[in-house]
Every structure is written in C-alpha cells, then in structure tokens.
Length: 312
Image: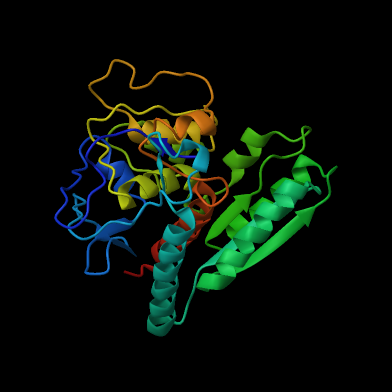
C-alpha cells in the first residue's frame, strides 16, 4: 500500500517539475524517462536518460469516487489507480520489445525459480508469467520440491547465470526455512538480478555516487506511482512502513534526504480506514502497488536485455 500526505501537488496542465537532486542518479538507473504529451504523462524506457523529470502535461487522474461512503463528509484520500498505470507501462515495454525484435531479431527472457508448493508463491509466479506473455518477454519456470537441497538450488541458478539467453533471474521468496535466502540471493548474477536483491545492487543503491544495475521492483513501483500522480518528492518528509529488504529498506534509501542526520526513522503499521481520512492520496489493495511492481520487474528485465544486446 502506498499513501501520501501533501499539499497543492496534484497538478494538471502547467504543473511544476521535480528535479532529481539527492537520489536522481540512483532512480534514473531504473531507465525510466518521464515526458509529457497531450494525452498525459508517459514513461519511455531506455538507457539514455536526462537529469531532470519535468511534467508539463496532464497527470494521471486519481479517483475519489471509489472511497467509502461512510467518509463522504470528511477529507478522503484520492485513490491512485495502479492498474491503469501498470497497463500504460506494459504497453510501452511491449512497444520497446517490438522495436528490439524488428531491429536485431532478439527479445528479453526471464527465468523464475519456484521452490515448494506455497499457494501465494505460485499465484505471484503465475501473475509474473502472464505479464511477461503480455509484453513479449519469454519466460520459464524451474520448479523444485519443498525439501530440495541448497546444492540443487545453486545448480539451477548457476545454469541460468551461465545461459546467455537468460537476461533476468527471479528466485521466488520466501524460501523454505532450511534454505539460506541470503546465500541463495547472493548467488544470482548481479547482471541478471532483476529483483534487485543482490548485495552489490542493494549496496550501490545505499551509497551516494553509485548506481545499482537494478532497483527492487516494489520500491521502483512506489516512486513511479508518486511521480505519475504528480506528487513532488524533493523536500518532503517520507514515512516508510516496514523494513523488509524487498520493499521497505530500498524504498527508504530512495527517499532519504542527505541533509538529515539519519535520513529516516522507524514506526509502526498503517490502518487504511484511518489513513484514507487524512492522506491526500492512497493506493487500494488490490489494484495499487502490486500491478505496478510486476511492471517494474518487466522493465528491469528489458533493461537487462538492452545491456546484454548493447541495444539503445
């Protein structure tokens, strides 16, 4: 879930720009360039990036009509439509892949490793494979039993690391308790770590002046939603709920203000029913961060293929 509190930042035509200062180089390494047109903000994916993001057209509309009726007479957060934004991103990714095929006759490929029979993990993998199919990314799944050994898992990941036809590797989390997640994730090639969890990518994200090859998809999705909704980030106080390495930690790194002594502070959870009454914008569950997170995974896979093919 993404929610934000701000003033006078939901802008239409003629709105102000967001200048990437403290974290622009880190975020720009995600290869998303934001431009405007008469039809609104559009993201064009590619490696040649400007140093600023300046929205001049109409931003995505946020929906207040879907808010609960019980809050009709109170301030209600605008609902950011993650599904709509995800569809737009996937359309642009599909266009880039078609251009790649037409130019060099090649396309991206994603490999997923699934261990065990967790229902939620199988559902997430199914969503990812479906999204790959929609944009033209080739995908494959290597399934291992719940009681597989670390050596078996290492062998599968090694095969994907060494396969030049594979551009992105995902080890679906969580893994069974007898497997060391950190050790497994460290084993994935940083150049194919489209989840962005390898210590090299996480470390470069955290260190000023360095750029990760990939930004974790969920955190990338959070920033994408804010930008496409016209929310100015620079100078704002950001609260990140949760400290997980999958979402909370990398998101907090993207949002730190270098003038702060620590750049962050930790607090508790969020109650949607209360937050919707005080926030300016919020994402629903489902239909918020999830679809955009998958789109960012596709974006990372496309970026990896572009690097491998030296395609611009």
